[in-house]
Figure 1 (cartoon, rainbow, N blue to C red):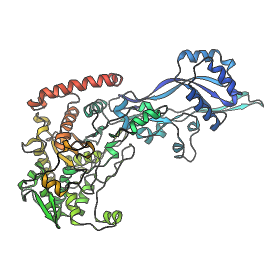
Figure 2: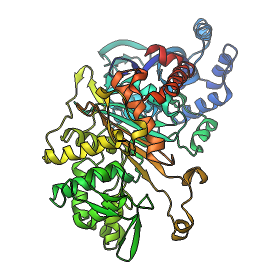
Figure 3: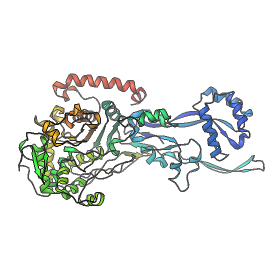
Figure 4: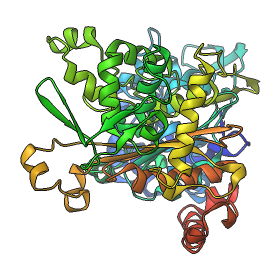
Length: 581
């Protein structure tokens, strides 16, 4: 079966492939036949040795490929000389091809020759899987839907005489084509996200708020799945394996990060839901809070002064949430986290989907053999400590805050033309006033001059977003370092810099999408993740390059140059995929 995007763009297809096979029991003297074949067709020594090894392992009646990706001229020469080549057959087969190369690699995955681990999935494996070099879905959608994509082979039962000559056909069962899949992903948007991320170690998820459709889900850097189809070389695999930006990792669903300040909405909702705070109650922030003999610092050393719910989210005051943690407790925070979609391995057909980690007292006792302490709650309240979330979970959290339903992600739109169920979800049962207060505060983050996301705001009032920045530490800051001044992220090695996060929903007045962005070691959510988030949001809403008027006037020249550069790069890097789109 083929795989398409939501608009019918081909994402995984089958292309003709010319090859030459040999059946051991029909060939007789295999070495002699191969010697004659080598006079007609140039045989690769490594490929030939691999074929000979396969023959020894395989049943004698199974065809083994001795030359793959040969030319039509090679096929013709073998066909003309067929009487002198017993057991040799020139074939036109099909091989998987991914026209958009790196854009869908972490979603669709790839096929490659069947492995023993693949066979172990079945009690009685399909005989097709015993054919050497038969292609099998290894990761992603190709793996999760392997059985329905593969289809079913035909078979015939024949009567033969004593020397094996076929006398008559007794019955026949026709084969069945595999099912076609349609993804919820918009291929144009997915390709834009790939180009916008460039070589950053980053991830983006865009989620539709009507049915939960994932419109884009991209990890960067990526890899070309076509290299895996016939077996990737050791050299090519080594380059991918040794890259510190981890191109093989599906960061959107597989990786979990401390969410940092994007988690503050969860803590606030937990406190509101428990009736502990109101929107106008204030907390004094002097730049730190002493709890249990330990000092917990705010990111703003001089402090924010008096903070209420909206201003604390707008300016991302840590002390407000430290204080809130003491009042609300970890159990309320954990319960709200799960209600908003965190700590859950969402059911999407991608590989190694993580559940992240939403800690509570029972978890620490079970996993760490220790009792929960108040400092654990204080750290958790600002998305640090033990808390871990994936970019997909962050998008789900933001979507649920935006619309108040337990919406869930959907990646498969239809199977053989039959629509899959909507994941719109029912009401979360949360107080609508509480949700409005959180949304209004998120709007201030992106649209108030004092908001941490104001520098990446949307100028067009019809498309303005409500967002939240987050910066998660990946290293401990000692008291001595704080005393002399915390080292700027720019002065640290790349892998010791903070992660940058930004989430949003848009448009604010009539939410259509939720977007999450994580930039590994980007240094800060507002500086690294927010600009990407804003650009992706506008691309999704406008279904292409937005007009420059959607951006603040000071950004026009830079955005115009960026749009032109990305357009050139997309055409240069992947002209086939672009033309198909």
